[in-house]
Amino acid sequence: MAIIPKNLQPGDTIALVSPAKKVDFLIVENARNHFENWGLQVIVGESATASVHQFSGDDELRTKDFQTQLDNPNVKAIVCLRGGYGSIRIIDYLDFSEFVKHPKWIVGYSDVTVIQNHILKNYNIGSLHAEMPLKFPEFPNTNDSSNVLKNALFGKIDPIRIQPNSLNKTGSAKGELVGGNLAILCSLLDSWSEIDTRGKILFLEDIGEYLYAIDRMMMILKRAGKLDQLAGLVIGQFTDLKDNDIPFGKTAYEIIAEQVAVYDYPVLFDVPAGHGEINKPLIFGAVYTMEITKKSTIFNVSV
Image 1 (cartoon, rainbow, N blue to C red):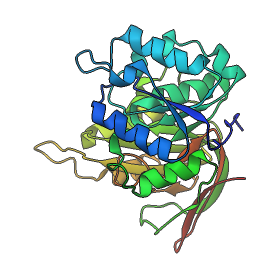
Image 2: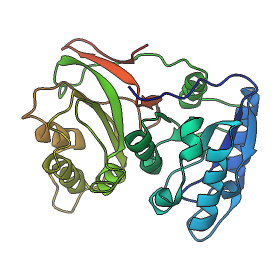
Image 3: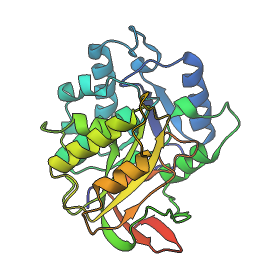
């Protein structure tokens, strides 16, 4: 099991950063209002309000800002405001030596998969795959995704119980949870941020991809040996998918089910985590259990 950062306490300090795409100032202020209302102190990083073309500042600024928050022992969580593209441009310039001494939550998903997978692979430190402020409702309103993020930061994550999917593969499994965005994980192969899936429960989600690309990326993971030694597979939301003029002929879930049919581990589909309307928090690096029958499913972090 990985080192899991400490739960937040009222009065703790968090930092808002954007390691990738730029963010509207109103999103930043809305986020500040939410976190302060939760009883937290908020540092707004320089990258949160910077803009260079599509990025939240140039690579140097985004690296410097993220490094500042990593090195600040008073910051207990680094919350990424949004994803997009850009984390991979700064990951090799970050120094995690102070972060290792004082582990803290890195919160986000999608493009943030780069950073989350990197720290788990190289430093055995967990992170929180959860909603980002880009999708927070306007303060003071809340929704399910923001409420469960708050609960998770303060140490409460409820089991995920969902209706069985006909594509599920029944069984039970226990293992460390790894994963994130499918396209990002493929982009990290053969680098020092490459995912280790051996004996793990793998979680996957994605957005905006062509169906044939989902098939190709699953083939990439399969040929790289990332699917054959899993304890279990958990599939989150695959949203806003596209198809060619000549249809691929399968849904994303059907594509994934076909690619893993040769393996005997349990597979759970339609977990409400990722880019969908509901984004349940997951702790990468924590040990999870999954129980799948024809009538019920449960996916839960072990305590």
